[in-house]
Image (cartoon, rainbow, N blue to C red; front, side, top):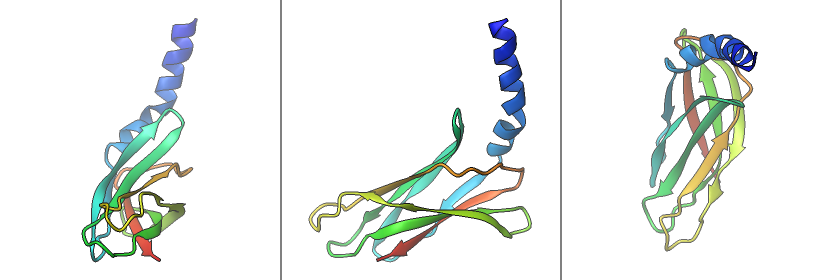
Length: 120
């Protein structure tokens, strides 16, 4: 009985899991910072997007937030979520900051996710 319930749950998630494999994720570059390639996918609790930015110059001001944007196959922005960047801010360190977003979106084939940082 447990196996049957588990199989039913996996079957219900299969279209979403398959669609997430087609989703490309990219991060916009900003001056004086190196983007950590965003990654993630459909996890047990829904969609997960993780990434970050690392300072390339000593006194650059790290972005404080990023906007995680869902773009459909036609190139239209269909959803977005804003999350804070957390992490080291010292001027002598690389100053890497990281974000984790768990948007409540369903994904379709051809969807893209783009990370748009806001400095400040």
